[in-house]
Image (cartoon, rainbow, N blue to C red; front, side, top):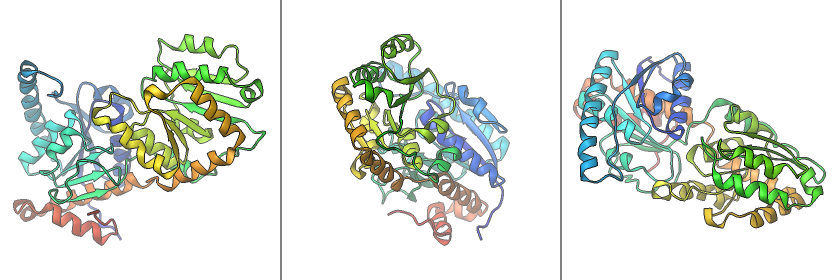
Length: 397
């Protein structure tokens, strides 16, 4: 039986959906367990506030040093310091039992504030490359949770406690992994979902419709496509599809991504952490084109495990063209078993219990925080490892 004592958990996340969506999934899990949850975010993360229903949300100042010269760094410093003091006031006011940061510079002020107050802290890394802010903070926090087995730049021995939990995804996606993969036979419809991150990707707006237009009419008639496009591209993409014989739905934002994943046989997209986690949890194969300007090329690293497992095909951005994609789609149409096999391999490496495992770590950090002697001896990492191993979530070393 898992020991539970309700606590007040603070999520520190901001910036893009890649940080906010895992925080949302963890929030839902913690609330189901009876914990109070608060979100501390920045001016970008506040745009996602409607998703975080039923909890308090606070905004603090934050800034990045990355890519800035000396003057830019000096201008950022007051914002960061101000954000730390703002976060300290909030954490003291609400009586936070634990703080978990989801990486990126928006989580820095809150984690630093928590450390200064003796509140247990945890970091979650979504990507297969430990982010620069997380790299800086990893040694000082009480726990580090990873999404990928072979995450780069992780110092396993220097950190107090490190475990691979996976990247939390919404429950609707987890449920897809328990369903049968849609039947795909020689005469069946082949459904393709094209996504490009939260804003769509120009390369898909150009390459995918061009590739489809070169396919034989018989192959076109088998296809159904839902494609996310940038607003400035959508009419041009519509014109490119106009002369084909396929059923196509174009949108600038996919409201029901789990619903689209449920019926999709294949996903074409970037290789952000959320995309990889959702594909492997749902058991869907992908044609992946990592964003070439991602920091430390982390999208290529994200994709590698799935590609190595046989669950995806990888193209560099400058090698992804209509001719190559058309050849790939024709081969899949002729050999549907290859697509089905890739779906199976994708599902095998998924981590559908990521939200649960991450919640276990956070919950136990809050639990041991009640013993002030542990905090004074700075040994929360050892204590949390003992607590988690009792319940079966063994630390990866």
